[in-house]
Image (tube, rainbow, N blue to C red; front, side, top):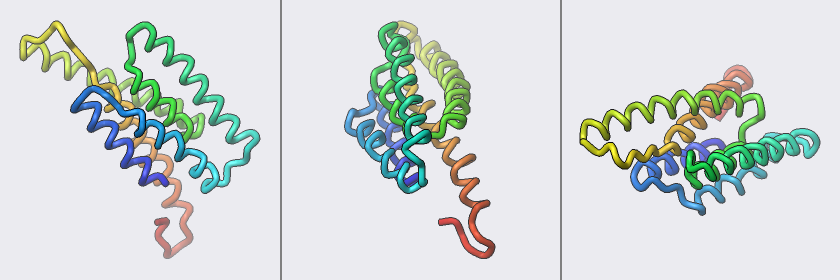
Length: 158
């Protein structure tokens, strides 16, 4: 399941970088995959799944305000909300911090590129790249790392 999420995040980053859009179908696939991940992970409906849904709803509410202020694109809002369904709440806070750092670096990099090309008028940041990379960071450092340590001696976790 995590490999499928990682592939979807890479696809989201690529499409956002290329066209500044993240497709609704991709975001829907990520969101619809979460219940299978919950089941495979053994999450209980209460409080585990309820917390996942709560974090996703809070994420959607906050990001909808940012979208209304034109500070974030709609695809980015949907991607981060769908990702909130997958990532445990404490790790989601870490994801947001990593995303903010990567997003800042991405903004500086794209800003410099636009200035160098004398295109200061239309700076469009593919923030889905920062969201996807932060998601991949959490998958790699927390989920896969924990799975590797939980494997019985002499067996690989995958």
